Length: 426
Image (cartoon, rainbow, N blue to C red; front, side, top):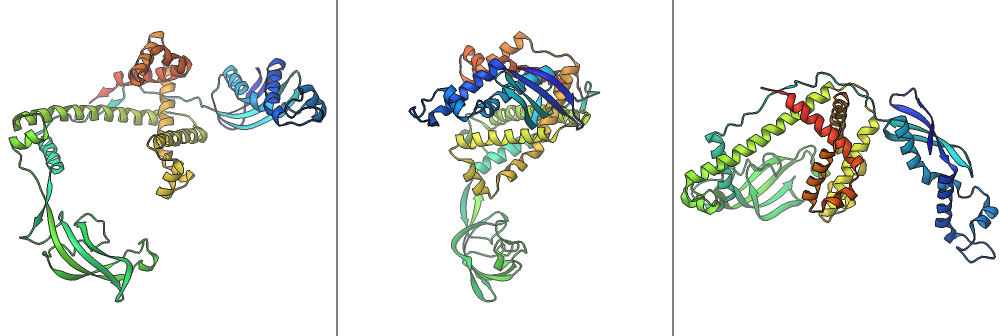
């Protein structure tokens, strides 16, 4: 296999490649196709699937297996040709056989390739570090979250309902004096202020007391899901059976013993300070990474093929599908549940896909400009990390993940480290 000709097309990031496949390679591909297809071929005088290749070719023509054999050869031939042309193929636009014989074949391909980008001023990027000070307010907020998780609901009898309460109600709705379908329930637990019901419903329960019966007036929104109720005025008869409020535990040593391994409130607060400090440090580091990433994307110069964004979004959907399968759900069921199709799902990943592509190109460009390379020690470090993460022997990891597939990732990681090390943190 060899690249015969390579030239840029008029469109940006587009190349026209003319590639030849030698006779030996083509012959092996033709023979492989024959072996796959012969089992379905019937020729008089031979049992089905037993006709010799020469007999089949004499009957149907010497080129009978050429088309499928060329299809088998295209991927590797294109990959090798792209390497010779020093380009990375993003998408194959057209593929056309020029000539074919027993001595091999030639084909022409129009391909979209990864762009040559430019980036400047990437060293010394200024970023602002978020505060990592652990204040008493943050500690108290964390304690309140723990109190909330350990709260319980209790019946309230000495006051009217208020936002945050759970009202246990019977309700029935009427439009023009006629009850409508789906507008009735008994002993329904409604958290007031949650916004789960149509506007005005929850607000009109606030202020009423247990065992009260009353009527509220509301208007269904114009975009309500039930067509027959859109924009309609309605009345709801309400019977308020019970008011329940959240009761939070007292913050004392007993509370601390219930929610932690500590004995006293002071010890617990010190533990929380350490936890919060680590969280703030992690958040600050991530924020710096985000600032650097955003700046790199701004600095990147060049025209990026739309196909790169599309490929990345497709890969993200594939990764999502794998996660779904791990949870016991298939993609079709998920899309039916969410009410979306494949195009809508892919569109959900478009923005993030664009960011990933731009950042990757920016870092690859930096790696190229800085002549960063993957050394033997880098590969060993990556393989060790993988072996530990997947609980595998390092030699098995090396067999499963070729070094070539890691090389660009290592160079990109080095580029990011260089930029972070040179960043000016304020």
